[in-house]
Length: 352
Image 1 (cartoon, rainbow, N blue to C red):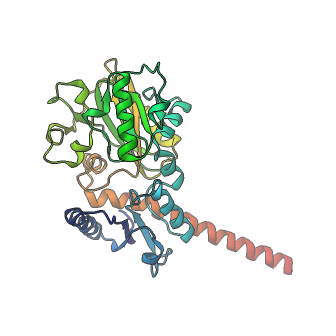
Image 2: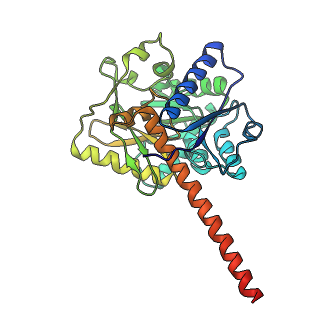
Image 3: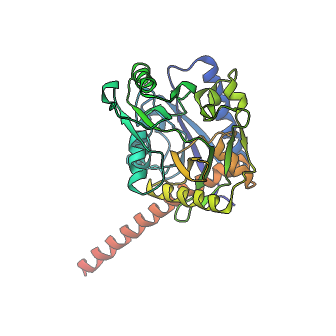
């Protein structure tokens, strides 16, 4: 049974939210609070925009564990890592990944370099800040062009796949104009897309495989997770892409996916929970295309979907993650007490 503790559900708002987006956030928060209270936790909510300190006043870090639901800060690249750094300074135990893992994963170009450095297979590619940076002999086609620091598939649509140099130049210019940032250009792997959730520390555990079903999209260059497929209910992609829970793979491919997922989790310094996304080519070669520390953890998100496949309810799964933060707090408290006792003993020996 999970330890019943005081939980502070901690998340941020955006000034750009429309009324329906605000209502959706409130609904998800209420659902999470209800689930946590149902499994026995005492729960409070702390909502902020960019400065978390004011809403934390009155919550003793020795008595409250923070459920960190911050996925990004408005108009601030790496803002989620900054918030974790502030939580560390204030002495709070919080769920999810540490600042280092979040900062490493925030820029897709850095992610690719890190994967290559650790010999984890990933599609070949390069980062281009502007059209002028693209060499005339660039020949990695078909390629997919992604804004280098956007999340949730922002900037990824059917036009993001390019087949020749002129299309590539046009798309990099589009990303610069719309998102005001560089592009990651990488080989588009035609094939399957499978993701694996991982949770735990020391000996992290793998959740069941989940696959994106592209069977209703005959064009192989449309077979990818796009912004529309996640967020636009009126789009073709939204209704065309379902999630497969009974994923069929060869034993060899399954073993490779698990090996590279765990290797990536450890290499990026992930903690508590994360999700690793793969593309698999026609020869069953898997390629890591995205590393997601602190992935979507709403009740209908992919990570919780994997937990439910193991028999956990939403509240039980989130409570298990909270247990990991509680364990860190307990170790820190024990270390503090042990250090204080040693100082007392040294002082007594000196006095004697």
